Length: 304
Image 1 (cartoon, rainbow, N blue to C red):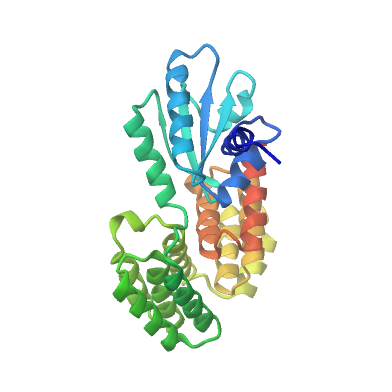
Image 2: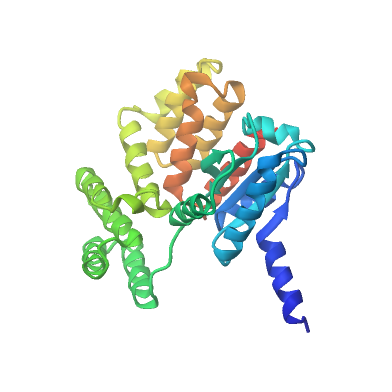
């Protein structure tokens, strides 16, 4: 049986670790699907790093498992630093849901670090109390089973108890989408408190609405397939095919098409393929197997 000191040390090791090019995907991209991950780019010769890193470590420990810290020595891992476009150190990035969502450079005060961490935690799925969680689960099940009106009423009742509940706001918006009322769905999301709009469950529904809007004029899938097949190097034709695939609910095929565009020219049309992939991943949700596989493939391309 572990002594108290050993147990505490093991817990700290799990929250704070060093990473390398070989383990970055698992330590950061994969791990951030479950809990926000802070990446601290540092070097032994960097004076401000010696001030910032202990502050980060203390704040992460104080968060008690709601966030993790991964430290990357830029001298030993120059490829990762280059991919993240690190210009100076210390450089800190916050990953949520497999991608960087925030960051800063230079030393920060303890208060600034805590505010940064609190903001990251706010962007990860939060926990409501057990009673609301059960009601939310029931409402989600109703929506999945097609009882849209009942689900909408349940989500609305939950919002009567907790007006800023992210899951309930997202659920009510999804119910309006199921009823074909996209404008009302967006109005529900827009009513969310400012600090809740970055919550992944709300961001996912925003992404669904954006995808639906972008795919509105996509045209027939067969026609898009024929044009793309006739011009495999025409990236606009490939992008139009991806939109048509999204419109036809062929999400996995759309991921393949968009990744193909990114592989050929990641900067095409101001990075449109990557942006569309992120929207699609958000719309599918972090636990969807198509999104998980797609994120891994995209990350492998970015960090290759």
